[in-house]
Length: 225
Image (cartoon, rainbow, N blue to C red):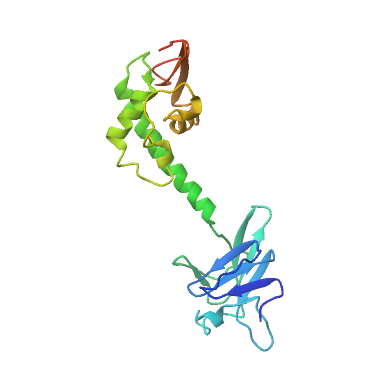
């Protein structure tokens, strides 16, 4: 029997359920509607919030109080405390029952953010190398030229969902007097995030606006393109 503030469904059932977090296995989905739940095995004398033994988890290995999932307000993330005498396995790693052992449960947003940071670091490294090849001391690189070189050298290497937004978009080429329509506007934002590496400047001559980028150790804002 599940607690009044919890919901468990079988895979394949489609329904919207409010909750703080979702626990998903091979054949079940469990929505946490309280800040803590007890995973375990329901018996005549004890009722677990979520009965693992009902979902082919090996009832003989599941303790009545197997583990507690709770929200750690101090650290601001969900965690799990191992309680069962047989320990538990999380993502292929076995944990012994240790009092107050908290294991952080990585959420999807955190994983995606880490991947994004790693991919951005890879792109930034490539840009630094490319710009150094295209320019010398006190020399700036036009963004239009940088974008063209990126397409030639890294177009296939950077075909990733999260980083593709920094690449040239089809149908967008050449300079534009409207900032929002510049084909390198997304790449420009990435460069701005790393002032330790890149220096950017914009020059307006008549009705034409041109953007330039340089490396910190090669140019300065006083040296206009």
